[in-house]
Image 1 (cartoon, rainbow, N blue to C red):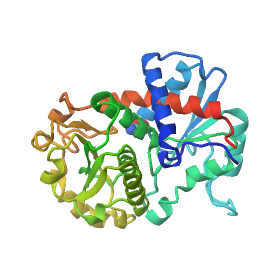
Image 2: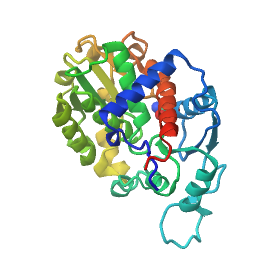
Image 3: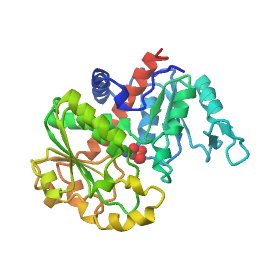
Image 4: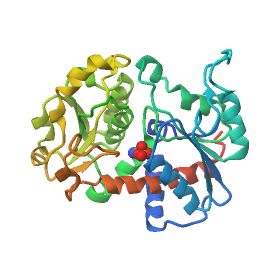
Length: 339
Ligand code: CP
């Protein structure tokens, strides 16, 4: 299949991303329209969601389209992804049929499929969405797997609202924060990609080397710096990382070397509760903006004071999910089969 998909912003040129953001700003001004009249999208959620589901479903509706929400294994048949397997277990149909049947009904397919958190060498292949992309005759949109490209666009849009269109050389800190459970690296991978894509001076702040992101995304970031200017620094020092920052973006994630043996990661994680984003740390910044993709556990990842401060733009970013996803859906429908 040769459809144009929206799986990772790295697959899209900077000019194309800017065009999506321009379109999204238009949808911010005018929410209703007919751009998706007669079009439909199947939204497949293998994991929970609040923002993604609401904004995609409502976004399609506001533009005259229709969204069908499915939770495979719950309200739809459990799906098999292994090729050539004897399906005598729990799964009832193969992605080869699911993707092609949905492609006969709808114009777009959105997929949310988080890692299984057992073996990163398997999870990093992103097999679920890749299988949909391989078999689907219509464009597939990543609604968060091991990256979160819609969140990236919403994030850049919010930064541009507050800092202006040119984000180059702004100091951007992506900080790991504590969370009682090991979480997906998707938003951290995405933040690293998009901040370097827009030429920012990016600091990845994390407790130690074990919390570095997958080499694929570290390499994307280095390549982005080479192409777009800016810089990439890894730091384990909170004070120097926050000092003079223009943007602090927080996310918690599980240490990749500990996938599948999280009980061994827990003592290390628990020793870094002090990575919480608080007023004292934000006071080190250059009146920096704070954001997070949400959901966020208050007073664990960031304090009430930070979340309720004027510098917190997390709600703007969440709103922008509605606008950028309309832009993605409309653009993919316009492009249609991209071969
Ligand atoms: N940020 C985000 O994707 O939120 P949900 O998990 O609620 O969709």
